[in-house]
Image 1: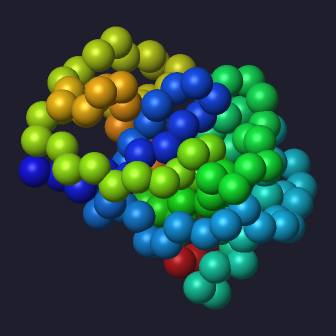
Image 2 (image 1 turned 90 degrees about the vertical axis):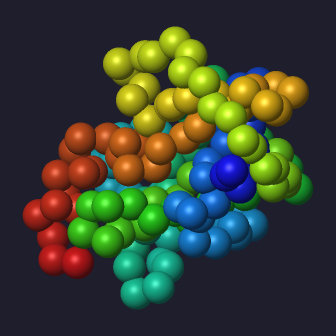
Image 3 (image 1 turned 180 degrees about the horizontal axis):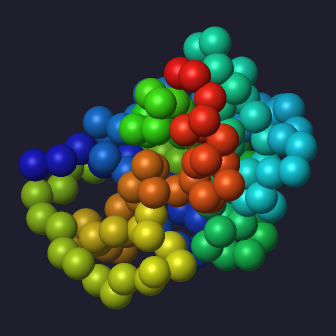
Length: 146
């Protein structure tokens, strides 16, 4: 059994295992990240680190996340140097118990998308935050001290 937080990126239902979730924050003003890839919408000062925030709507739907009440920053734990990554997503609201996941189609351009929650109505796809950082940002994290 897995507890998952569900949300959306555009029309796409997504979920993340709550074991990776550190905190869910409202949409905040972010410090602009110079020379960052387009999907990295800014840096969030979080627990003595500058945490990159990735707009999942930009990656999945080709547009920025809408500024709505349910749009949140999901701060997640990643393996790279014990860092955090913020996920900007829409309709962040529900925790679900899931007992079964199934593999769907895989997309090499989006290795951060995984299996589906088979026992949920919309069958959201799981997000794997450690696979989400663009290579250029991953290299910066690996080169800097944790």
